[in-house]
Image 1 (cartoon, rainbow, N blue to C red):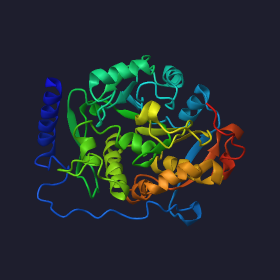
Image 2: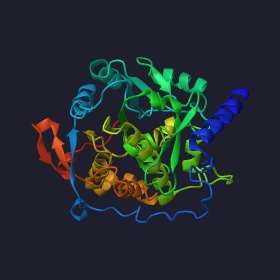
Image 3: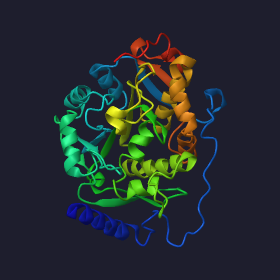
Image 4: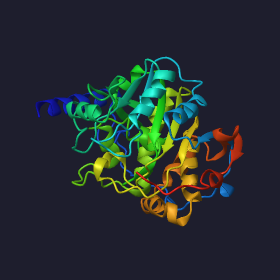
Length: 363
């Protein structure tokens, strides 16, 4: 208990100094009284034919193995230099759906020697709420082959949110500034509040520190319900948090999404996650954040009704598609892209091609 009080006090003091007088409860400028208005349409899917703008590249393989992960990553690692952070969702104890640790071990041994896995403590009380509990959980889940830096273990730091309407700065684990490059390695799945959890969620929630930053995203100050911020407002707050991180790393950030064991529940729910009913698909990679999350969503929507029913319902009921439209508004990537099939000599394919012949999920 003494540790928690010290941690929170230290974190709040650090944020106050770093914000230069910013509102501690919101991350917005002091004296701002008018609440922004959330966007709309988070429950409405926009097909590729109705999108405009420049084109990004997304790579795709059906090879759900360590070799497939390595191949996907090696398409997009050109700007990964210096001290590298690998942002993973390492999961609650014995979580059945996380990216297999052996795959990540193989990738890091081949292409990311000397890199650290990074994580933050959780906002909810559970097996990753404190650093001590978090490290025990990491051992249970097999994350013992590389250093794991819990970046909010000691302190927090704020990074600017350029063009944000909810935040001017976001509170992060202080160790984030120790790195030159960021590899965002994401298990794509559903999410209880976000609708879906892709690279945007992995960064936006996953780099915000467990006591201050995550509270700014999830909770209206003074509310008893810690999870009262929902729908489009939640998507926008989370996305602004992501923007702070990717702006910090600039060109030295890349993304890999693994579409495997896609429960409608986040990996935060561990063994309590809803059963997986969506078929496994493959692995995607890109240097464009919006493009990779958009491609994963497009692949979900390209499935048959039976295959995607639960996932689409989760995405639309939470208004999760606002993640995509808001990323575009903030200039965080492109929702028009070319999908490159790594299994067939770099052939251009569509999301419909990617989901042909999917097999029902089996454990």
